[in-house]
Every structure is written in structure tokens, then in C-alpha cells.
Image (cartoon, rainbow, N blue to C red; front, side, top):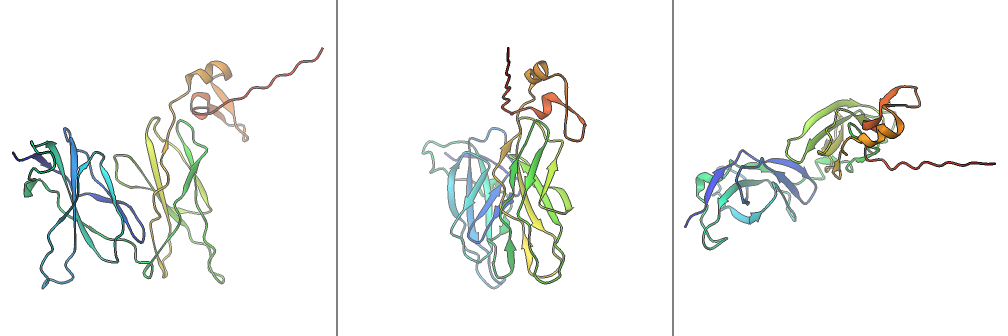
Length: 247
């Protein structure tokens, strides 16, 4: 019995380095698992296309990383399996069920450089601080600005800013309960060109802390005497209160 499958949209690159590529795809309602295939791209129109190689037929999430890649371009495609056949992994997936191919490959270190992934810290119910390593250009070349992107577990990368100076930024208007990833790259218009960094370790924005308002009031003042919402800024925080008395 053939497996019933639903075609997906084209997957996209989540992150990559010199030896691996992580791809993601949009989920399909009712999918029990996903299948992933790969083949090396033809180097010319005269070459015969290779057969797709099945990497896995039992992916439960909507992402997968392929390691041990060489300096070549590859085609990746995904299929969503909504009903398993009697033999589990032996059912045939029809050609029409596969997504269109994503063409990508690992980073060529001769052509591209890559920064370490950014780090995320000091987050609350609505914001987080993202920190990255700065570059020290040779000679009298000024330090470049940086571009920053973010995504969630289900979304594609989206621009946060394309002109950040320094080594950190506070990202606001984040949503409680969602997990976020960030990536960074310097905006350099001269060689060597830089690729996006690997994605940061994900952080989950904590839920608003209503209990904190009952203890500390609705607002607290920061170092600049700005009134901030207590349920937002104290979310996910451990608060220690010390008291002393003398007679």
C-alpha cells in the first residue's frame, strides 16, 4: 500500500558551516513524519542527474542537518507522510509528493568567512539582549556595522536590523512562550565576503509574571528612572529579598 503524502513548499536554509547544512520546512497538518532526500547538483547541463538519495523517512520535526558535506552544491527535497503503509518504511512515496528542490551547500572558507554565533542573555517577557563578537579590521579601516536576523521554531529568518554598531542590541516586542534564534554577519562591502553565522542557542521567552506585580507593584524604575512594567521585566527572574533588623 502506498503512503499518502502531501507536497510541501520549498524548504529553506536554517544555518550552515564548512561541513554541514541545516534545512527547515513548513509543517503540514496531519503529517506523522517527514522524508528527506539529497543529491549532488549537476556541474553542467551535459551531466546526467544523479538519483536522489534518501537520508531519512522518519523525521518527526521540521528540520534536519546533513553533516560531512563536501565543497559542492546539493539539492534537498522533503515529503510529508500523512499515513504509514503496512511495512512502515517500505511504502513508496509518489514523485508528486516531494517538494521542489532547495539548492545549497556548505560554506567554502576560501570564498566566505563566518562569525561565531551570537549569544542571548538578560531576557524577560518582552525582550532580550543579543551579544556578538566584534571584528578588529587591519590598518585604519573602520569597524563594520552588523546585520542581525531572527526566527522562531516555525518561521523563516527575518531582518531585525542591517546597520548595528557595537557588539550588542536589545530586541524588544518578543512574544512570551515563543522560542527565538538569532544570527549575525558584518556588513562588509569589500572582500572577503561574510556569510551568516550559525544560529544562536534558542531562548524561550518566559511568560509574564503576574505574581511579581502583587509583590513589587505594577512598575519599577530602571537606572534611567524610566517606569517599566513589573510583569514584563521580572518574568523568569529569581528575586532574592534580604531584610535585617536591630533592636
